[in-house]
Image (cartoon, rainbow, N blue to C red):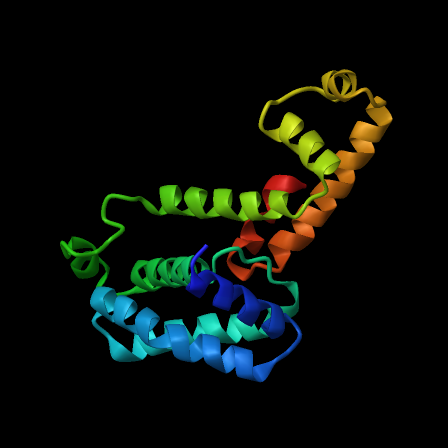
Amino acid sequence: MDLYDIEDRVLLETLKKGNQLSFRSIYEKYSDQLFVYGYNILKDEDQCRDAVQDIFVWLWENRETLHITNLRSYLFSMLKFNLIWEIKKSKRRNELLSQNHFPLNDLSYDEFAIKELRQVISDFMDSLPPKAKEVFQLSRENYLSHRKIAEHMGISEHTVRNQLATTLKKFKIYLSKISYWTIILFFFK
């Protein structure tokens, strides 16, 4: 872990507690980088400023519930997602997509969304207690039945059902706090 990661973790922890100085430090550290990245894609200063501003407004409004493992990657992922939406609704869509330097040319929107969702799921799973994580993985990644999970772990099927229900409720809450994933909730009804 390098010094920047440690610094970001400290900034995130104090940001969660409402420290405005930490927020300002994060903003000063990343806003110009995000703007330059966005401008190289959109070539529109106002749109880029708005996209970057939206990210930081969201970061401040959701500071108490953040589960971020890598701040820089998280901010750039949010920006990429915002840029995709900007391009999708832009009158200059074809022009922007045809530019050779656009970093997502070879990555469709669906592939990008899936990649980002996998990261969100991974971050969520890292926050689970070990037994809950194991039950969730056996169910959702290994596709085992409740009975098979119970046999494998030496617990009752009822415990497996309760564990999954609790974990999925927590997951819905976790997703709802990540604004651009709220729409995914219908997959987990």
